[in-house]
Image 1 (cartoon, rainbow, N blue to C red):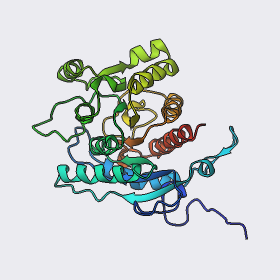
Image 2 (cartoon, rainbow, N blue to C red; image 1 turned 45 degrees about the horizontal axis):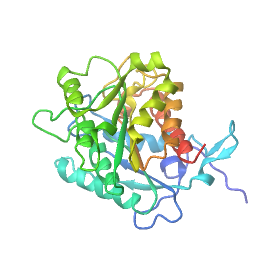
Image 3 (cartoon, rainbow, N blue to C red; image 1 turned 180 degrees about the horizontal axis):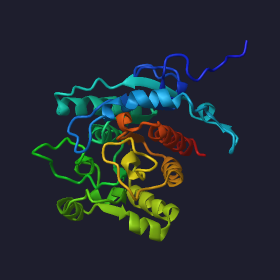
Image 4 (cartoon, rainbow, N blue to C red; image 1 turned 90 degrees about the vertical axis):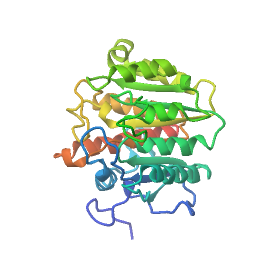
Length: 308
């Protein structure tokens, strides 16, 4: 009897993929993990509910691409490995748990994909990925620089992941790139900190002048220069607030939904060793368009990773 997939029925997993554990990934080539982390947040809270909303919305996405004629899950077998057990009172311990999780997945030759959760989770995830290569690049798609040395005396916050990545021992700040910077939440001290470290960032004005495709190719080339692996962090507040209102710090003047998918495909084709999608806050996503776009972005990242 042919299996009937009913969108609204069954236990929600990422894209309806089978559940697995880090200790038994089977034949998977990619493993998606939820990280419901929302502490140390510089914007509005609510991203801790992102993974759950993402799982629900992803049931509307089948693996077959009619336009290109391929099945993503046949070419890139993917599993849902549950959530990292975050500890809201203890950011340091949570980052260690995230680091260990990403490291264990990546060490098995499987692509770790983290769904957040606020951007601070990238601190632990990037550390875990970096442990699996000699030298790593870091490319963040973000409206904000996130190059704070600290925020209110804390160093594991959503305003710090770019700087924390640049401080990883086997990451050269010259291979750290932020793409999509715009809006009025990028303070002078973070601009100066990026310059001090040699971190390259692309503002929206430069991107539009170059053209999105040319600009992202340049950003990828810089992040990959001389490294053994690339970590990709996709902060969805980089998308224009009209297309992605469901985030903690929505910004006008960001990427269109089409540009977002184009960027995601290019990033996937860069063969990252790990990646994340962060700042999905469904409490502000009344129509559900934001989390749908987050799911589509993940599909394009994975399609690119599959060589499509």
